[in-house]
Amino acid sequence: MDLALNDVTVLDLGQVIAMPFCTMLLADMGARVIKVESRERGRERVSLGIKRTRKGVEERVPAAQYRERNKLGITLELKTPEGIKLFKELVGHADVVTENFSVGTMDRLGLGYEDLRQVKPDIIYASITAFGQHGPYAPQRGYDMLAQAISGYMSITGFPEGPPTRSGQSISDYYAGMLCAFSIVSALHYRHRTGKGQRIDLALLDSLLIALDNLGERYTVGGEILTRAGNVSFGGSSSGIYPATDGHVAIAAGASDAVWRRFCELIGRSDLTRDPAFATAAARRDRRDQVAAIIQGWTGQRSRAEVVRVLSSAGVPAAPVNNVVEMVADPQVQAREMFVELDHPTYGPVKTTGTPLKLSETPGRVRWLAPMPGEHNEDVFVGLLGHSREDLVRWKASGVI
Image (cartoon, rainbow, N blue to C red; front, side):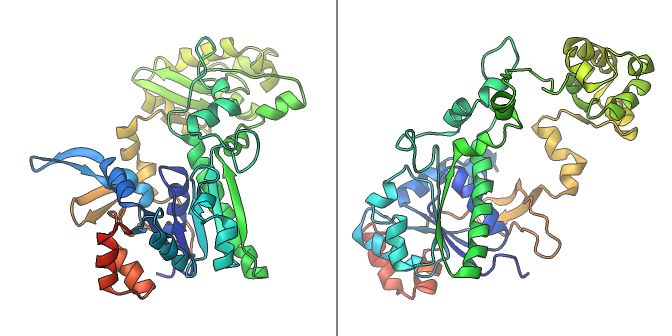
């Protein structure tokens, strides 16, 4: 299949989540992504696989690193002169270089943007760091949790009586990864028009700041400081998470006044639509606890399935709050092929997260699972660069690859 980015080659030095996720998106769309890692880093990555027992033998399946799927894996030690030389040789065949080391690391290696521009003037060079390449925090090491803390994200997550709460996953890594992939594709388009490469600077902190709805503007424009509201929407307690007899449901009963009227008729409380205290979104926002009690009084007597069936069939947005088991089995998740099964040469059939990139002509594809460290050394160093197998043997013995 002719995929959208078949003609793009990416050298990926990304580690952990943010940049590997970015380049996974590019690889899903067909880019030739060459994952470059040291042997030590490769062993560490594979050791983080999911533990399971198969045929009586305990093993770790690197499917945990689904962000490395569809990539070619090579080992290369950038702390050796020969490793630097080989990397620069690869740059001559690449369109994009990606990295998420601490600020200044690549410059110290002689592989910064200005260095690689000398090798390939139109190279696109993308970096993701916690705080960006400039500013007072730039030199500091940082991770998602720090970005959540500084951005205010934690301050609005959790219950009013509880402490600030981090998101259940490393949310800024995924936001930054998506923004970086978009930036890379934009830079490729610009280069197609002008012949110019450029530097891309993405920060975990910045990625969260643009995902806070209008939290910042509520303060900068109106002086309002929002804090934790638990499972109830800031826009009013007619949208939130409510108990059912067998778990919880998410309901947006106040998405609009029309939806609110629909909801009230369904639960036999059409009187609320005529009561000025509840008829408008502004009024309901001022009576959060009362509205929540009304909704909970209805949902708390019914199963999740009944609540969702009654509300969604009448045009009131509602969904069950799934655990992971229920999520994987959810018919919508299955219909969207968001979990796919592939055969691994060592571990057999492995079910892994699918691609969200649904394009009519060039949809994303999961073609293979994460490579083992150095799995494609011969394909890249011999097949792409034209070196000999004897060179591979020599480089492996000397610790270059």
